[in-house]
Amino acid sequence: MDFLTWGRSPWDQPILTHLSWDLLWASLFAGVVFLVAHASYMVLSAHRKRHSAETDAMEAALGHLPERITRHSLAARLFHWVMAAAMFTLLFTAFLPIAGVRFAWVTWHWAAGLVLTGSILFHILHATVWLDFWSIWVGPSDLPELKAEVLRELGHDVPGPKSGKYPLGNRLYHLAIVAAGLSVVATGLFMMVRVRTPFFTRNPYLFSDGTWGVTYVLHGMAGVGLVGLVIAHVYFAVRPEKWWITKSMILGWITRRQYLEHHDPDRWTVKSPPDVAK
Amino acid sequence: MAVIRDVMPAFELFQPASIEDAQAVLDRYGADAWVLAGGLDSFDWLKDRIKRPRALVDLTGIPELKGIRPWEDGLEIGATTTLTEVVGHPVVRERYAILLEAAEAAASPQIRNQGTIGGNVSQDTRCWYYRAGWACYRAGGNICYADTPESINREHAVLEADRCVAVTPSDTAPALIVLDAQMVIRTAAGRERIVAAEDYFVGPATDITRMTVLRPGDLLTAIRLPGTWAGARFYFEKVRDRKVWDFALVSVASAMVMAGSGAGSPIERVRLAVGGVAARPLRLSAVEELVRGRPRNEATAVVAGNLAIEGTQPLRFNGYKVPLLRNLVKRAIRGVEATTWTS
Image (cartoon, rainbow over all chains, first blue to last red; front, side, top):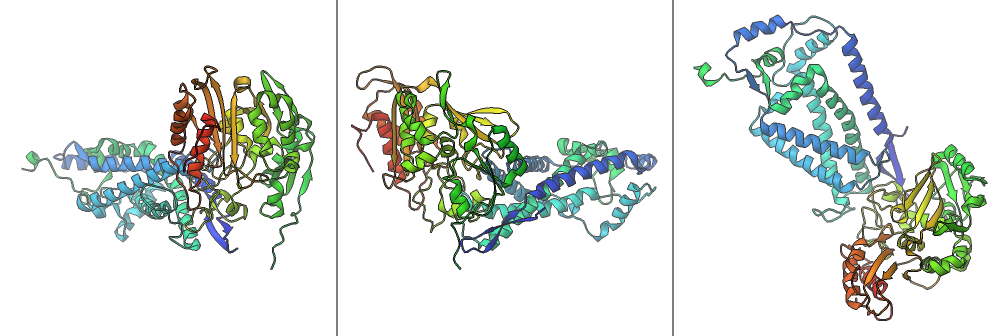
C-alpha cells in the first residue's frame, strides 16, 4: 500500500500530488475495527459503573438544583448540527467519487466547506465570549480522571474524580477534531483558489508545486482521519450508555441525576433557581 | 538525453475471439490491461510511453463486434466497425446521413479505414498537456496545466470546465446524440447495459479521469440507431484549422422535423448537439426547447445562437470559440444559405 501519490512536472521532476486513497479504506477499516472491538469489550468485559448510592447521596444533598440542567444552549446545538451536516456532506462528496459513485461533487464540496468554516468561526467566537472556553480542553490536571476512567474500564472499583462539563472522552475527541478540522479547513480554503468559484480568481501558481503537494496531502490526511473520527463519534452517540449526552445535544438539557452522576459540581457549577437560592 | 518516443514498451498481446474471452483477460489484468480497437488513440499513448499496460486486448478479432445489421426499426453498428464501413453503408447514407457526414469528417481516409466507431466515441481527449504525461487533474494530479495564465489553450473548453478544460475530440459523438443512439455496453460482470449516447459521455465534474461511462472491464459492443430521427432534416458542420486530418475546433449536429413543407414552417421536433466546446459532446436541450414550435428562420436562429453561448467561460486563447459556437448553432437551425456570421 502506498501512502503518497507522485507525478511528474513539466520539468520532469517528481511532484507530490496527493495522499494515496488506499488510506481511505485503511481509515474506514480502522474505524469499523475499533467500534467492533469496543462494542465487544463493552458486552464481554467487567467494566464498572459508579455506585448509585453515591449519586443518591449527592441528589439528597443538592436537591435544590433544578430538575433539568441546561447543558447546551440553542446556539451551541445549532452549531453542532450545522457542523455535522457540513461534515457529512464534505465526507460524502469527497469519498463517494473515490469509491466509484460518480456525481458532480466539487461545488457541493467547497460549499459545504464554507459552511463548515463559517460554523467553526462562529463556534470559536461563541465559545470564547459566551461559554467557559477552557472547559473543553485537556491538560495535566486531567490525569487523575484519565487514570480513574481507565481503571474503571478495566473492571476496578474506583470512586475517582468526575469530569467537569465535558467527560474526558469528549474533550480528547474535541482535541482530535480541532486538529483535523482546522487542517482540512485551512488547506481546503487554499485549494479553493485552484477551482472556479465566485469568490476567488483562480491562481494555480499561488504556491509552488511542492507546497501544493503538501497542501493536498495534508487535506487528504485530515479528511481520511475525519472518516475514522466521525465513525467513532456516531458510534458513541448511539451507544446506550452515552445516549444521555446525545439527547442533551438535541434537547439542550440533562436531568439533575445525570448531572450529579457524571459531573463534578465543583468543576461544572450549576446555579440554583433564584427562589431556591434565596 | 533524447527521449525515445517511437518504440512501444513491452506488453503481452491478447487477440480474443469472443467478448467473454476479452473480458476474462481484462478481469485478470485489471488496471494493467488496455483495450485496443483501431489503435489510433492507443498507439500514441504507447509510443509516447505515457501508458505502460502489461496486457493489450485487441478487439478486432471478435466477429460479433463487427458489421452493420438491421435492428428493430433502425441499425446496430458493431463497435469495431470502421468509419469507412459506416460511411459506405447504404442505409446510413439513406436514413442517417448525419452520421455519414460526421464519420467522413473524421481524420483522413487512411485513418477512417483503420479507426472504428467504438474507438471514435471512446477515445481520450487530445489535450497536449494531459497527453504529455504530466500530473494534471485528468491524469490523477492536482492541477490543470491548460488553465493557467501562460497556457496555450486555443483548442480547449468554453463550457462545463470543472478543474479540467479538455474537450471531446469525437466527430461522430454529436451526430449519435442527435440520432438518439443507444450505446450497448457489456459490463465487467457480463451484463448488457444500454446507455443513451447523451449519457455515455461524462464531464470532469462527474469523473475527471474518464471521458465515458465505461468502467474498467466494460466494453462498448455496439451502437444502435433507432428510427426516431431517421430521414430527418440533418445538419452537421465541423470547423477545424485545416480541411483534412484535424480535430474539430467546434462542431455542430442537428436533426429537425418540420411541421410543414413551406419556407418558415414551424419546427416540430429538433435535437441539437455540439462538440469541441466541453469535455463531453453537449446536447443543447435548452436551445431545442426554445426553437420547438418556432418558424425555421433567421430570427429563431439568432435567439438559438445566443442561448447556446450562455454560460461560456473562454480561456486566454479560445475566446473565438464563443462566436463560432453561436454561428454554428445559427446555421444548424436556419441552414447555411441565409445565415450571416457575426463576431
